[in-house]
Length: 328
Image (cartoon, rainbow, N blue to C red):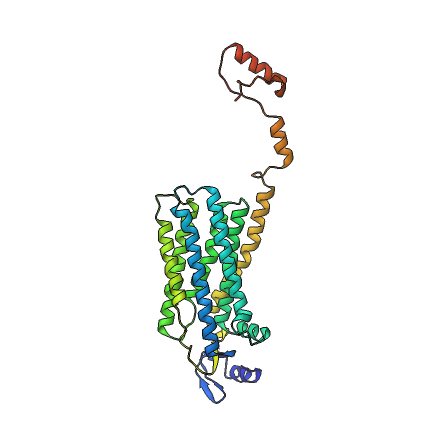
């Protein structure tokens, strides 16, 4: 809406602001207040279907990555770190793609400034950008966990929080038809249940006798299929694409919460990684050299010069008494 039309709508009264109709080019659009996009409805529909397919294929790839850890006979720590690095990279790249899609790829012929302005007004695009932030944050959690030894519960909780916000965003995603609403509800709940089951499995280090990982793969697989098979209802529509004003949709609050969760994730990850780098779990070169030079040998070692004099005397006394005793 132009500033003039927007001011006319606001003059109708803030109490019923979202319920008034808006006249655009002689056509009346019933409330909630709509936002006219800089691209056509068919252009937006084609770009939206492409984005859904990319995200669906990304989820399918993540399922395949973690299936390697589930199907392997021994899910050892090096294999889990490789799977975490691969899954985190896929998640972060898909989030970066979705963020770029919001500001440019949705319509390459429009200017980025107009697309950003539309994304700030349209609740759907705002939720898409929030999803991008959540996917990047979830991917960062797995990448950091693969490269730096941090507390597992911290990494898993942050990863689950961001993926859970992504699922909630899909559930709260406003749609124009009942079938599209149902598809997004199934998509969001499947992703939410799959993330919770996979988080539980991560805490258990992928035990062979658990069923959480296969069930998580099933739920995430359903979400991937729904994403790939999704088709926009206005793919053959004429005229401009009409968004929904953020002031008239409760889903905008969910988008703000998701962005806040992602913003909190990065400093926590940085602090956890820094603490792991300088904490007691990682030894400095001095402490490693000290342990190497000041090691007290076992009784079957004969080098007395590598021991303090009182320890060497203790070992000699133990040998004379024919005791097979180690230093307490």
